[in-house]
Each structure stands twice: as C-alpha cells, then as structure tokens.
Length: 476
Image (cartoon, rainbow, N blue to C red; front, side):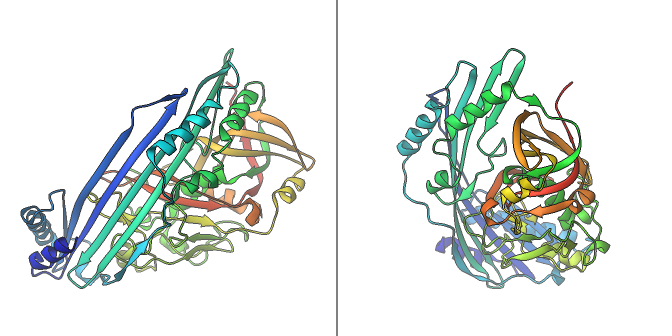
C-alpha cells in the first residue's frame, strides 16, 4: 500500500483536488440446509476509485488494475470528465471543502475462528431444527466479511480503516394442510449482523435458536389469524429495524430530498423547509446517526470522502433537526449535514446513505408497556414491506405476533400486518422501551442509486409502543 500511495502522489495531475479510495474486501458464505453442507462461496473485490475536481467540474473513474498504467488511465478518464463537466454542473465542486484527515481506524477485533469451527456450529444448530415431520425446510448460515480501505488525496488526506463483519441466520419452514409458516433468526434481512467475529453468534442468540425457532414455526400453523382494526401496536427491535429504515432513514436522505433519486428509488415527503421545527413524531422520539458505535454494522471513523464521523441528532424530542446529507448535498442545499458519503465498493461513487440510524432508549420496561395496553398486538420480525415513492404511506407484515388483552400477553397470532402514514405513525408513539429492551440490529441489503448500490446499515432500537394503529390479518 505504501507503494500505491507513492505512485498516487507521483501521478496526481495539476488539478484543484484529486483523491484515490482503495477497497480490498474478502467474503465467505457458509450454509447448511437440511443438515447438508452447501457449496462454500468466497469472493474478493479489490480496486480503486479516482476522483478529480478542477475548475468547478467533477469526474471519477474506477479501476481494478492497480498497476502504474491502470492508475494512470483512471486518472486520465476522471480528469477528462472533470474537464467536460466544468461550467456545466449545477454545483461548483471546487467550492466544496475537501477533507485532509489522517488516521487509522480498526473495528472490533475478531476473535480467531476457523472455517471448520463455523461449519460445526452451523451443522449443530441445523440438526436441532427438525423436531417434527411438519418441518419441511430448515437451515443455518453465516457470512463473514473482511474489509480494508484506504483514502489518499492531493491535499494530504491519509486514512486507513479495517472492518470485520459476521452475518448469521437460521430459517425454519413448517407446513401442514394448506398452511405454511416460516420463522427466522433476524428475518429475511439478516438483522443480527454486527461488526466483530464469532462472538456475534452469542450476541444474536444463535446458540439454541434452532429448536426455539422450529417450535415457533409449528405453533404458528395452528395460531389464530391476526385480528383487524385500530389498536395499540407494540413493535420489538427486529421489526423496529425496518420501520426506522424505511420511514425515517430513506425520507431523511438529503440527495433524495433534493430530487436525485426520483426516477429510481423515489423522493421524500420531507422538504428542506421542515428542518428545525417539523413535528416528525411524538416528544418521545429521539433518533441519532451514530457511526461511532463500534459493534454496530455500519460504524466507521471517516466516511468515504474522508469526513470525520460523529454522533448526530436527526430528531430530538420529536422535532426534525438535520438531514442525512454529505458534504456535496450540504453545499447544494446550504443545510448542515453529517459524514454519510458512502459507497458499496471501489467501483461506485459515494452518495448520501444511512449508516447507524438509531432510536435512543426511553424509560419504560417491556412489562410496563404490555401492562399499559387494554387491547393490542405485539409484532416481531419483518416478513414483507411496501412503501410509496415518497416514503410516506407504508404497510408491513411480520412473522410473529401475540395478542395483548387487559395488560397481558395472550394468544399467538399468525400473519400480523399493520399500515400507516409516517408522520401520523411516529406521532402516535406513546412509550419507548428502556435499555433492557434495546437491541443492535442491521441489514446488508439497503439498495439505492444509479448504478445500483447495495450497502450495509445498522439500526439499534428499543421496543416501541404505538397508539391506535391500523392492524390487519393475512386472510383472503
């Protein structure tokens, strides 16, 4: 890497600004299905993105050829795009301050483990799932990722960051008659993904989860269907994760608010005029963007443009404070933002993305929240979602539900769903769980951008209770 740094310094053209971001990522997927080890899959992605700003223009070019000629060619292409776009862009890119940060960041250290260790653990958990002939499919899986990233620039930036990730999951499907039900550990979005190593399995409750999930899948076969009507809704962190993601995270992305995503991922019901006074939720809603929580899935010290990251309040006491806007979007809008310029790999340019978007804990225990409900439903683990292009009207379905009657959990219910409108939904938040209800979740599957980028995000949340939400079942 020192030789690449020297080569970049030698080849840097006479422009206002030039940077090189290098990513080297290795991943491995291990899965066991019905107690049979599946073919292992491994991948490596290694390359560099060159960005050039000159006379107000901006250009970038990526290459997997890190030889002298490969980097020279990428610099030539990006410089040419900067020249072509100079004077023709909506934004004067030369006026945007560029980071000159220097430093090193190491994510949580991964405890040593071998492929054989992981295969043994997955086989062991898979074997516990087949507790009944009604279990028709089951499996356990884990994806490990190791990422090294460097950022150099002509104005002195010199950053190195290292990350280790682990994504575990268990899935069990039960079938009887005309009924099929699936239960998972963390949902189809692999919600128990963290930074770190094999210790993440303990944090995710992986050990012993196979038999528990299998029993829940069987129990759901004979459960009553979710009732329909307006009632209190208690969401646990596995479902809160997606609720935060879709109806807070995406609406607050500043490039989306400015219209960049309207022809692909949609716009936002949020407008620039709302910040500083709009009542996004009840006074109990406090949302932070916190890339400094080390174990969470999208933690980092600098974003992909080298901007230092810090914990930032997006919603405080229900009032909308700040958008998810990187340095470029801040310059375009004149609004304060944060360090969230992120790319999914070396061959994509950074854009405004969520990182760790969290709801801060409140003061209520889970038992206190349940005890306060006269008639309602507890739901957990997302199974389906739908939301409109402005991230306003939404509908979510969950794997698992329980009725709450007169302050007590009662019957199990299947196919629980709910719908709402973001503004009125968050304003109906009436109790927020304390630290004992809090869980650190995330997903590797957040899609956005043209060309498309699928990126890792984190969402930590307590359990949350909402007042009089429209709930419905899955009956035809």
